[in-house]
Image 1: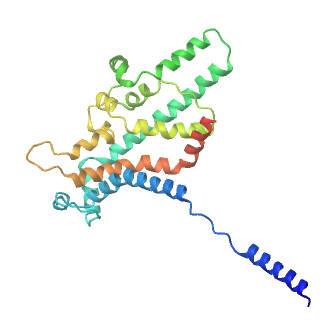
Image 2: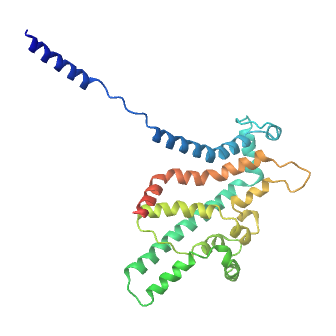
Length: 264
């Protein structure tokens, strides 16, 4: 082999080894910082929920212990059973479910009909109807509470499911544009109906018609001599939280898709 041939062979070998050697990628500091911030935000949001669950598994002595215990205890079943019995949780969860589903479905049905009429029908006063619909979005329930209550009382709907649900969608209209939007709208409206406090406490006067958000008050001692049973209160709160969380988890994909499509 000549000197020239040996030199060419060495150059080929160096080039091959240079190509084969993996290039070291820089550490993605920006991505790591973003993920760290997201994890920190999730921890801030999730910790109160975790601590509520922890308290719901403890007895009253463990609840008032200082420093507080940050791990679950062994009283989960007895606390949840006592909260279920004391606050009549089954009936209240059913009432809240009826209210949440009825308000959500009713608003969506009326929204679809009103949106179809305003968009596709060219009739006299169409823009007036549109602006009237739009203005109702600016009026929350407390602003029109007295007139709404008078109408419901005149119709004989006090302390009924009709009274709980119909006034929360007959006077408001939203405009969903597709099935994904409807699914996202259902999640928002279900949680809106489930978390209502002011209207249900005004329109109902018996325990049989109370919703779960109001009924949690039954777990709070009314006398000033008793310690608040925070373990039972948190057990009731966790049970009240489960249905909305289940709806969000079940419809998460459609909810996110609806929000994304709304922004396009």
